[in-house]
Image (cartoon, rainbow, N blue to C red):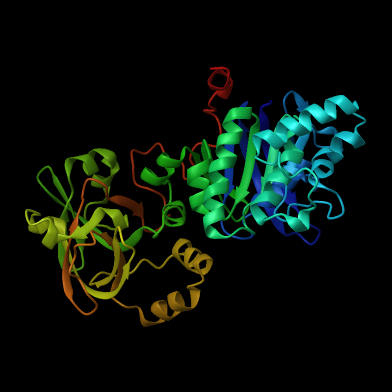
Length: 424
């Protein structure tokens, strides 16, 4: 195991295209860190620089106490798992797993011990003589994992290893990879575009955008305290609802005026956003997670100043819940952040049309109890949990908290020491 460190790392391609800019990140010994972000954000480039598959333009990368900038990939003591498995089709499972060890001239009995141990851990002990074409997608991915495990490297690097699997198998495999990493205690850097994968697997998640780290934090902290509109909109499914609002004050109370409607902030929200009083009389971005909206008919004691009224545009029945898409009378948030988020979701054309109309309505989603009777066309009141509201500066896109957030969050200075946990 080893600490992995990025210090001022940048990658600039011939012609001036900058893929990664001034990346600073400390990954603890035995830690599982996930790099996540939209396509083209630089996450894979960062991983490939760590692996030695891309040259570093600026800065240094260290594995343990060694700077590896000019070290050949084979000498970095890392093992990489690729998106396409990279198995040898003519070799059996046993030989695919053993291939790297044979290249390093590891003794035959040691190879046999490691391969059998990896096969046992991964549930491959019954398939040593099968070739890749006779395996399922999940089994092929296990073989690729086995080849990495037997190396006993200082770090695992994984580049979207589950992207070729179907949805059900992805869920199963991400659980298995997470459990395996905890068992082995090997420092792991995992790249994915899937924010659900990132949130469920990583000890910490590093959100990237246009080559820059936006925020690095444990999953729940990312979700509860995003440092920017971009992080808030990227993390969460369905995505966070965003609308323009005006901050108002009455005595000790704060309100968010949303069009003609007015939400009273719960004390918890006031405490979480002390700088919000500086914005009284100003427009801000109000963020509400879908799960913090419920059909007010099912919460009859909800005060009027904790409700939003909207017209139902669509319902998605998921069994345990219903996603209710509504349109409310509040200006939409049109910024560079929300434009990029729409493009990543593939809804950029709808966003542009919305921008051209300069509509005074915003579309929001509530995650309602399945007992709701809300249907398309209905005018529905949604009960808002005003303890969990989010606020962002309309110009900068940064979260409005206590003045200590710098817009990029922690970039790795508070690194958990996983060694004690692994030893335990």
